[in-house]
Length: 218
Image (cartoon, rainbow, N blue to C red; front, side, top):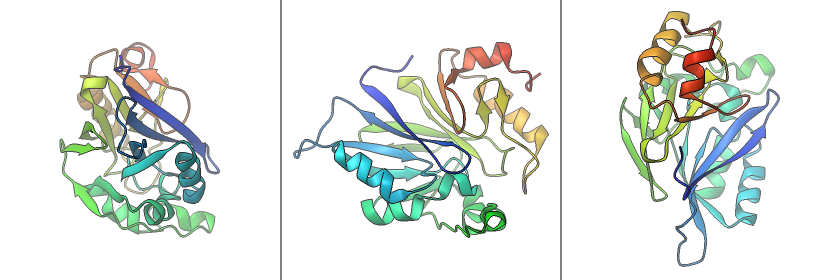
C-alpha cells in the first residue's frame, strides 16, 4: 500500500469527468511552508487548478501527461503558464498532444494543442517534488499512452489504460485493442497486487482486484 507520507489528491474536471491527480510528500515543506507536488493530466480549467492548489499552499513542480487526448490536456497550457512547471510525456505521444485532430479536441470545437517540454523514454526514472516515479509505456488506448509508477509508495497513475473492472476505449486514432491488452498483462499485472491504481476516469482500484475481476483482460 502507499506510504503514509506520500499522498494523492484529486480533481475531477471536464465534460467527461476526468480524474486529475497531484502527488506529494506530506512530510516535506520548503522554507516558505509550501508543499511541492507533481500534477497529472490537467484536464480542464488550469486557472481553477492553480487557485485551488495555491490556497492549500501547494507548488506544482512538474506536470505529467498519461496521454494526449483532449480530456487530459485541456488545462495543461494554462497550468504551465501560471506555475512555470514544465510538461512531460512519453516520447511517442508528442504528436497526439500537438495535433488537435488526433487528440479529438477539434471534434468538440475546443482545438487544444500542447507542446511538451520534456519527452521521456519507456522506463525513464522521473524525480520531482521530493518524489520518484517510473514511466511505464502502455500503448493501446493511444499509441503513446503511459502510466507512472511510484514503486516505493505502491501508487500507479494509470490514465486511460486501466480502469476499475474495465480498460480504455480502442476505437480512437492510434488505438489498438491487442496492444492495450498486452500492455495491461505484461506491464501492469506484473506489479505487486496491492499497488493502488488511480485511473483517468471512475473509481480507484488495485492491481490484485483487476487481475481477478477485470473481464476485458483474459
